[in-house]
View 1 (cartoon, rainbow, N blue to C red):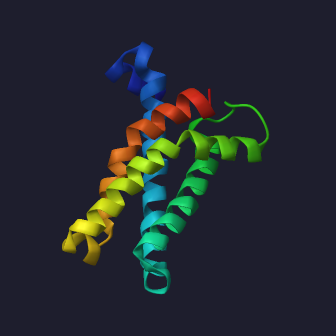
View 2: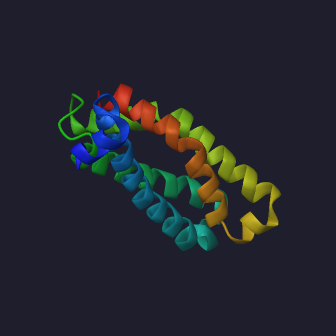
Length: 140
């Protein structure tokens, strides 16, 4: 697979491209967890708390899969330390992601009625920053 990516992006950027493709795949899984959690809990705790709970669940799952697959063998320290570093490093991405989410469900009746739209907006807004921070801070 790396040789195919190298043919597309050149050998210098192949590892970066492969990391990004894997990170995006993990992000898609996280998006599904995030969405399922929001829809499952919104009636009981409201959209704002559901969004926070869902983000924590998705981010924790993403960290684990990224640790085991995307950035396998990279990063130091205990699992608990790395998980905390992942959440801390992605705090800006969290603010961007959930800021867009809260903004959309606050001002858009369509996003309020269909929170998946707000989740998608937040995911895209935070994705590139989270990838950069994960690759350069958490799993270096």
